Every structure is written in C-alpha cells, then in structure tokens.
Image (cartoon, rainbow, N blue to C red; front, side, top):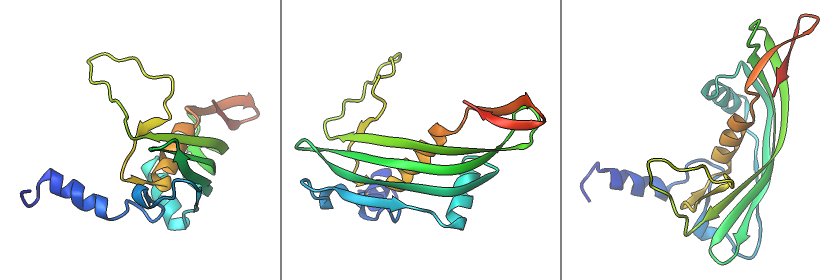
Length: 165
C-alpha cells in the first residue's frame, strides 16, 4: 500500500476508535448487551451545537446498549435527550425545545447498497452496513440532527416563539 494512500488512511483510522464511546465490533460479546452512556461535557456540547448550527445545547444524554442480532448483525438501541435552542424562523428570537426520542440502528454484515441512478428510499432507514466500530457518539449526533424541529417560528401567543414540528 502506498504511503498516504486512501486505503492506508482508512486502515489507520480503523485501528483507533473514532470517539471515546466507540466499540470495536470484534470485541463485543455476541450473547450479552454492551451498555453505553454518552454525556458530553460543556465543551463537547458547544462543539456539537456549532456543528449543528444551534444557538445552545444543554442536557445532552444518550444511553442505551449494543447487542448481537442474529448470528452476524448488531443492533444499537437507546434514548436520546437534549434541550436545544434555535432562532425563531420569523423573529429570530431564541426558541428552546426539549427532545426525547428513542434511537435504533441495525448494523447488517451483508448489507446491500443499491447503486442505481434513481432509487426509492427504503422504508427501514435504521439499517446500515456493519462497520468495524459502532460509535454511539456519532449515532447521537446524527439522531439529534434528525430530531431537530424543521423550523421554529412564532405563534401568535403573545410575542413568544415556539418550536413547530
């Protein structure tokens, strides 16, 4: 492999975890759940808030487990909780929303990616190819991003903005 090649980079990346919460699949017990808890500190929440263009992020917590699913697959289940603040889409006033959602990802060893110009989205968007590392922190950020209100806008209840899903 040539030094600096893409394959070398991918190989090097897979030797170390993508985050402190990541679990190497080959080290997981197939017959027992592996619990996780991701609660970023203030600096971690500030970085995530910046990445997701939030005005503020508080009380971020993602707890759950990773367990074997059948002979070769893995399932991650958990509960995501966070308090987010975004600008109102009408007045730009801050709008605070509490998010509490269940999260599930099924990692499939024999995942079949469809490589066609036009493909309908599968109904089960929780299924993903099995990586070398299952990273609850990355799942948390993705799930938070997908759970954010599409827009926060003013409701004519006084001058208060409320989040609208």
